[in-house]
Length: 288
Image 1: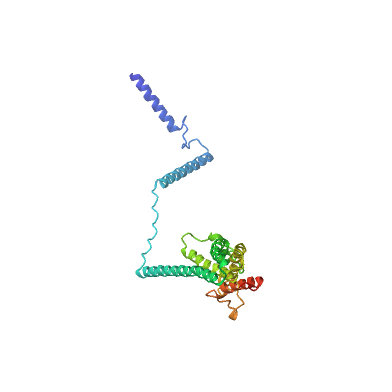
Image 2: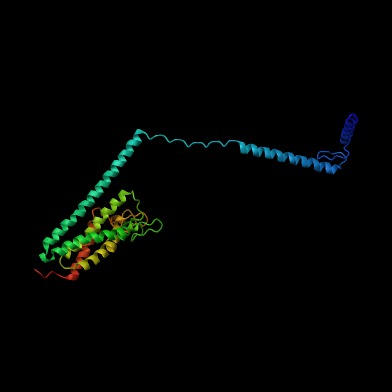
């Protein structure tokens, strides 16, 4: 056993001496017995290896670093008492305007009953039922036409292609939001004016035109004639409108356009002109 231990120790000492002399052992970082060019390559390799280790360490550290929390958006300052009061006043003003618009529209709507009574009392009794039916159907047909395309021809404004002769947008109110009550109230108010213009013709021709002919005329009047006149004078693009922002109007006082606030021209002159033409075509009344 003692001889074996001495042999192992002697072998280890021989190996250590061989390592010190660089004999029989080739390490990556050993530069003994190497040419100068090879030594330079080995040093470059070691530097690149060190740079790689540093890059890996930095990448790992960055991946483990906690992500900073996003900076919270600044909280807006609460409205002042004056701003709250202004918002309340604006809401009340908008509500009053909306209520006034609907109320005036209802008054014009109820005028249709007065028109029907006036016409029924001015003609022979045998035509009363026909006159009452025409006044009722006048509103029904006018409402459908005004909704589908009449209002669009009158006030429809295309953002890219505005037209100073006729409207070209908002057919069937497709551009109106479901919560825009002012737009719906405006549609109703203008609808009552449109029906009034058509009813003027009904009164002038009371008892002289059958129901079918008058309904066809109502569709043409409320869907083409009246909307074009409205667009020309009341819209912001019409060629007669004083509020025309794109095409300068050359009519009216000092070329400022036509002012018609109560409908004396747009509603009554349009309806009266149509009634005059209809009476002229039919000729004078001959029945007692």
